[in-house]
Amino acid sequence: MFRKLTVFFFILFLASAPCAVADDSHSWDALKDRLVADGFNREYVETVFSASSLKYDSAMMARKMRVLLKRRFEPPAKKAARERKYDERYIGPVMLAGGYSYLREHYELLQKIDKRYGVDPSVLTALLLVETKLGFTLGDNPAFNNLANMAASSDPLKFFDDLGYEKLEEKDMVWLKKRTKKKADWAYKELSSLLKFSADNSIVPTEIPGSPYGAFGICQFMPSTAIHYAVDGDGDGRIDLFAREDALFSMASFLKRHGWKNSLSKEKKLKVIYRYNHSMVYARTIYEVSRQLEKIRSTFGPD
Image (cartoon, rainbow, N blue to C red; front, side, top):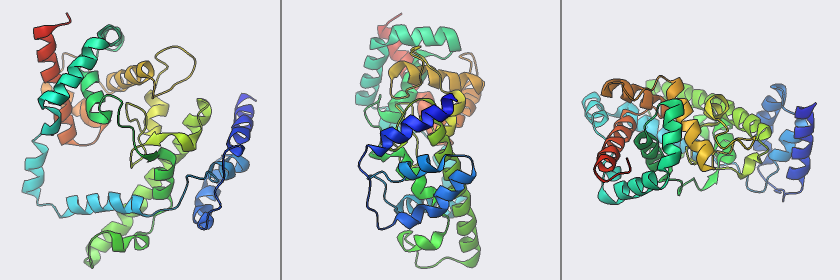
């Protein structure tokens, strides 16, 4: 009963927002039908997809496939060498100073989280610094739009001209078609999770800013990650990943449930961090930033 009322009030709220008179409205038909077939209320789906900010743009998927194609053609030796490094942009004095300032300002909260989840303050600060520059870069477009566009772009012929290749060998074209379909299905699952998370936490789904690939909040959780690992850190009865306590508690929850312990070896810590973002460069960057922050803290406090 509560869920039906939640959907009802969401429809009323969304209906009061400006609607788009979109020339590409039919681009969403298959996606909307799929959501309804998977149990979402038809009226709710139609209302969400009428948001004035929603425009079909296959460039979202083209951007992702360009990255994956580049990695596919990257020489193995170059890839191996790259993954042994970390991103030096976050190890400079300005970034570390910002991270240390944040750690000092919120140390009491970070210690509270450490006691509950066993995740060092320096690790959570490093994640927040790299993910959103401590909450200051949250994405330029709604996460819903980005995920919907990828989910609706399962055919690479829609955006092939934007990939930067005149032609591909047959085996690479077969790979591209399979990989694009797989990524579109992934985006669909994340889109479904975003709608569910939004309804459960009284959030308008089309107004959540996110990354180009749909991560949102100052912790940059994917919607499915939010459903499984996000927690109500401030105890107000809802989860808001743009709120500091909810985001930090949720980050610690994620790490702990993936096996994090402060006593782990470097290699085991890297494996846990890798689960947060599947990149060894990323994992090494988080590890190095946290190491530097802890070094600064142990010298200058707080204790």
